[in-house]
Amino acid sequence: MAISVVAVVVAVGVVFLALWLGARRRKALSLWAASHGLSFDPARARGYDDRYPAFRCLRRGHSRSASNLMRGVWKGHDAVAFDYRYVTGHGKSRSVHSFSAAIVSTGVSFEPLRVRPEGLFDRVTEFLGFDDIDFESVEFSRAFHVSASSARFAYDVLHQRTMEFLLAAPRFHIQFDNGEAIIWRDRRFDGETFGVAMDVIAGILDRLPPYVRQGRERT
Image (cartoon, rainbow, N blue to C red):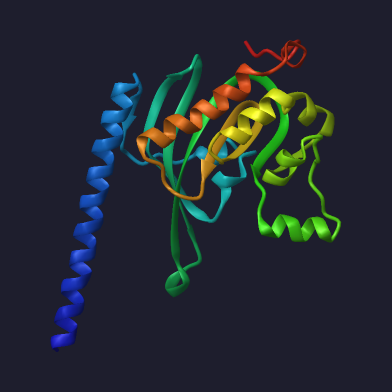
């Protein structure tokens, strides 16, 4: 009986702690968004997986939703930043996962292109012959795993100046497709990290050569 009471007290405490941390996070993100001219909406929103079907990170698991949405213009580009939640498994094997991401309108019709930090598993698969796109910069090729529908397009976008920029920037997962880019990590951001992430996308776009933009501008 005493053990059951303790278990209930602990469970209630965990719930209240989660609610308190959630409220504190919403307040912090609201203040950060306001200070950067972005709107803020804490309500849950569904349908991002269908709206951006090419972005794999938004199609994991089931019961997907976004929350703490911050919308506006960032460095001249329309953007939305948010927390994302999805569920894997059911019943006793059910697990809830969350991370943060930002989607930035590029103004350019990109071919599919993905850039993410190189991991140990990538090195193993490379040894087995499943290689990613390699670049002249050995340092960049070791630091990032790059895949694209066209290696030529990847080289055009990730030229020397952009490689140097990404090597000096914090690491994120990045995916370009058509007129949008998504940037994320498998954990939640604070406000400043949202800003850093969107700065990375803006930095890549600022360094696009004119011949890449030519004929690809979206109106």
